[in-house]
Each structure stands twice: as structure tokens, then as C-alpha cells.
Length: 542
Image (cartoon, rainbow, N blue to C red; front, side, top):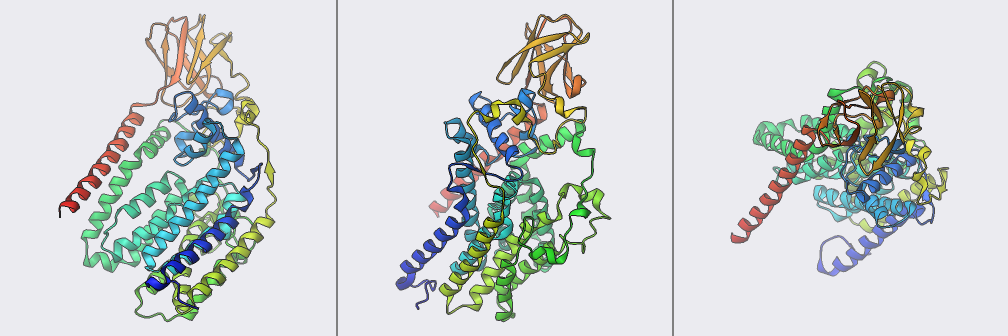
């Protein structure tokens, strides 16, 4: 059988056809549950569908980037878009805005994420390995690995499975930093920025990976210290690019307390036994990738640069894997790492690193029979994926287009970590969505119009309006004069001090820092675009 990946003109067409066929089979099996008229289910699906509906509501009301979403709790609002980045969720929300159903919009979004993750890994692994065979193997392993499939179809962990798109770029960026003299800084910048705008916790894991990689390759920086300066500049640009997200979060956390501070998650209880790593159940790695990694014993470990890189990634993947067990002092450090919640979240990094390593190892071990090796890998990973899909019991549900018009369904915020601590009774939120109360307990009917709540015929020093308070709320009287507001209202709601006014309008206008962060991010984008245009014009003249 001819070598389809030797780069010769004779096999180039066949090689592309083979790659396309393997890619198509991989993506079909990864997307199989999406071929349904009903919506796939998962542990956190209600919350993420609600986030999509909230963005749709904002788009239709002319406020697509509002940080406090008005749909939650029957209109009392929840700062979901403040604390959970919505970067890719605008895809299904736009589809919903133009009339697509809830299930269809979500399925298109999931399919997009699966395809994007496959392509991202293929591109990144090819850049690292300089081998289309290794890249294809890595992409197949990455897309069909157990943790990825469970993230999508069992856990509905939208933040994590969207981060799967960007973390391969982080790995490629680290390789570029030490092996290519940082010729493509955009790799690690795009990877870190994209990951941050998908899932904050995975970003922390990526930072740990970067620190570990830099320590392992410290000799490179001793010889070329200018690389550290370049990396520092890239980090600053990435921080400026994404500050529209992280800076408002830090501001809110500095100004008030939230529910997440009331309880510490027992991460020690959730740690795994060694044998549990290989189980076929949610929150596990499974056995498939480990089977493929046995190819490490079929190759020589000497002067081959690519094998050395694979060894580093495999070792790092092993460290992340072992950290999910009791070998890491979760109990002793629980106060510092409780936000991780489940130690097995670290498997997202194991999937990344093991997939790249397996791609390099197998392509080296099967140098003369690369296409057969790819088929064997595809077979192993397909069996793994189908077994995982058959095991899940989440099923499907038919969501009507008016599903979230019902107040009870707008309260699905899982733990509600970003509710203000002043909210004393979460169950009562939304029950008085159309009523405001003054200092004497007299109630008033409220008028809702988009992001604005109005109350008229007032006769009191203050009025508590049915909006959960977050710094950034503003109020005006009938003449347009600004009024004082704070979060001391009933059950954590906005309190407006009327100053004698008989009517008030309350809305979320944002803080000065939020607006400054938006401007910084926008200017950074414009500067990057200008720099790219300048470099291209300069290269054209040369």
C-alpha cells in the first residue's frame, strides 16, 4: 500500500482524500446524537440554554452585550454574562434571534464546537509534529476521547467543551516559543484569550501548563532571555485584549460579596482512586488513550526532536492525570483550590497532551504503514466514543420556543454562585417580579421595557424595585436627575432613594471601569489589526 503522507505529487491527492474521509468519519461519530429533532440533555443543560435565551432577549431588545441578563429570575436579572464569558454562545443566541428552535440552535452550536476542536487540534499538532499523519491521529484522539464526549453529552459542560477549541493553540504556542524562537506569538495569544473567554478554570490549568513547560525548558531561556521579554509582551497584549471580561469581574468581587463565598466545595471527596481513571463513566479518562500511548515503547528515544517534545507532553499529561487522585493533597489545600470543585476537571489537559503525544509516537512507530495506523487509531477511538454514548442516560427533551417565558424555568442557575450574598431567600426571587415596595411596605406596579424598570406614583423616601443589585445600576427621576441606588433592598434587590421624586426609572448602565475595559479591549483589537496590515504591506514591498 502506498505511503499517503510522504508529500509526493503522486500520493498528494490520495492523501488528501484519505484525510478527508477519516475526518468525516470522526466528526460523524462525534456528532451522532445531534441528528435528532429533540434537544440533547446533560447535567447543566438548563442553565446554558437559559444563558442562550438571555442573550437572545438582549439582542432582540437592542442590548446584546448587557452584563446583567434581564431574563433570569423572571426579569429580576442575574449577572451571568458578567461572570461567565459568552464569547461563543452568541452563535446559538443569534440563531434563536432569527427564529431557529432551541434544540436546533444548540445542536448547530455543539456541532460547530466539535468541528472547530478537531480542526484546531489538527492544525496545532501538525505545526508541532510537522506530520499530517501525526496531526490526523491527534485530532481523532482528541475529538473522540472519553472526557470530551462526556463533557458534551453527559455533563453539558459548555465552558469546557468550548475551551477544547483553543487549548491546542496554547500547546502549539509553547512549542513555537521554545523551538521556533516565538515566530508566531499569535498562537499562544489566541489560545489563552480564547480559553479565557470560554472557561476561566481551564485558563488556570493552561497557566499551570505554561509554568511547568517553561521550567522544563528553562535552558532555552538561559540562552535566549529575549524570549521571556517577548512572552511578557504577548501576555500583556492578551490581558488587554480580554480585559473587557476579567476586569469587570475583579471589580464586582472587590465591591460586594457573592454566594460562592458561603460554602467550600469538598474537592477532597471528589478525588479519584487510581483505578477510577480508566473507568467508563462520566468524569473519567477511560482506557482508549492509554492504550494508544503504549506506542511510546515502539520507538527509539534519542535525538529525535519531535519525540522529545512528545515525551514532555506525555509526562505533563501524566502529571495532570495523577493530580486528579489522592497523590495530590486536595484535603490539605481545599481552602485554596475549592473552586476546582472536581479534581477530574484536570483531565481536559490530559486529553490535550496525550492526544498530541500519541499522534507523534504512533506516526513514528508506523512510519511505513501510516494509513493503517490511522485506521487502527480511528477504530479504537470510535469504539470508545460509541461505548460512551451508549452508556449515557441523559436522553433528549423537546423544548418549546416559549419554554423560558415561564418564570420557574428562568431560575435554573445551578449553584447560583454569583448571586449577591444579600439575597436571603433565593426561592422567592421572581415571585414579586412585577411589584416594588416602599419604606412603609406599600406595593407598586412596575413597568418593564427592555433593560428599564419604571415605578410611578411614589410617596416614600425609597423604593425597592424587583432587580437583583449589582454595582452598575443607575436610576433617574422623571426629570432625568440621577438618584442614589444601592443593594440594601428587600432580598438583595435594588433600593432607589427617591429624593422626593414621584417616579423613577432604573436600568443597568454599567460602571466606569466596565466602560474603560471595553475601550481598552477595542483599542487593542484595532492596534492588532493595524499591526497586521502594516506587516503585510511591508512584506509586500520587500
